[in-house]
Image 1 (cartoon, rainbow, N blue to C red):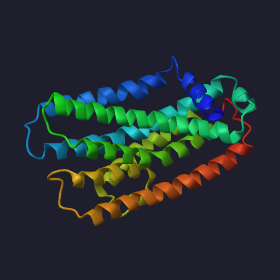
Image 2 (cartoon, rainbow, N blue to C red):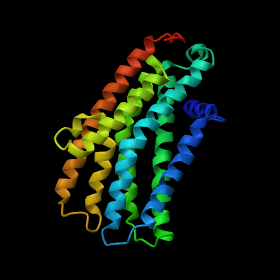
Image 3 (cartoon, rainbow, N blue to C red):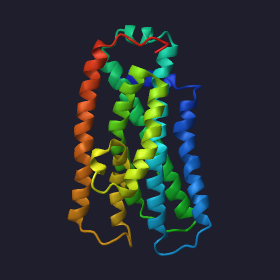
Length: 256
């Protein structure tokens, strides 16, 4: 019950802030843009493949890095403004609860953003463009994208606490460049690059689509495990190190 109250308090802190607009409105605009773009294209048997590749590829390599950097930085910046972390660190809650409360809120916000964007896209394709869409494959790709995003959230949370919003946004900006490069030429190294995991995990679901390419279930399973393994390992490591560091942290000077 206490943890529900923590999450409720974290949610209330986003009221009257740009964060809710970023999380809920931006994905709708993003998906509407895609619907408008593909409404100008000729409908072919492979159009679902093209939509899938461009939508998840663009969202994972361009939207996720900057959104993660923005909301991670902002959720910590609010605490800095409200008394230079004194109220945040001085409350009666344990450091573990404080840290996990922030992290779970970030996971919930990015999950909502990805699901909203995917839902608006498939609804638009189905009911407005009359394109038959494999709903479950798109939803699975969205969920895998979110799983691949979790280590980024954990790292950006620590980065925002330690160095502020500018560092978090800078890390996200670097992620746009690096994830874009890896998406094109990184077949041998992608599992070692944290920014590439959301794109690669979602992309493998494309092979389940009609005309998505002939790939065996073994291949798809193997590629998925290649992504899940580093995601899980890195998340556990980043979370453990972050908690150890946060337990000893006494706040950051406002001019740092």
